[in-house]
Image 1 (tube, rainbow, N blue to C red):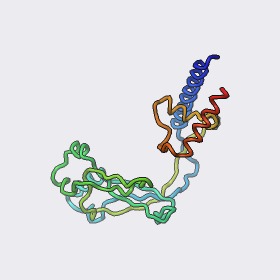
Image 2: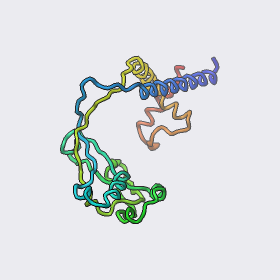
Image 3: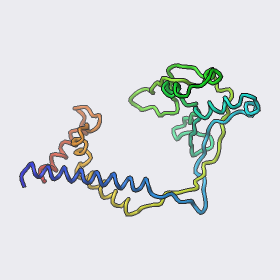
Image 4: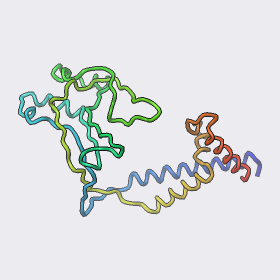
Length: 217
């Protein structure tokens, strides 16, 4: 086999494995969901609800409409909503972007509850290599009319397991790891392999591994 034919056949095989890998993942994600015979609790959820005095007001529909747009739900394994590193899980009202705000077309009774600016979303995890991202939009001016409601998170349904599909996914993943297939696919699709600098020793090891497999093919 000529040199170019050898590498063309290898690239076609990698693309075929990628398509099969994606099809198997879609099969797992679209597997039927069936109810459990005995539901079980798996953690707690926290969300916003209206205060009792707000529910008795004549203009409660205004607050109900706004709550449906800014409400969020967070999940935690512990009832105190503390992460493994000791930091708390923060529940914050959702920031409404300007385009969505214009589509809502709310009257003044709704708009008066919001303020516009640049906001830091504390519910999003902060990457270690950069600061949190600032979001432009509208947020609640004063959430005095909101209460936090904690409820148990009950698992009532479960997706059907496909052991043969997962076994084939493991085989494809092991082969791709062994032959540096993911790195080759990134090159075929025009993507860079990670964010490494040119003097990163891990990049040199990957290049050497790729060269070694090229020499044996």
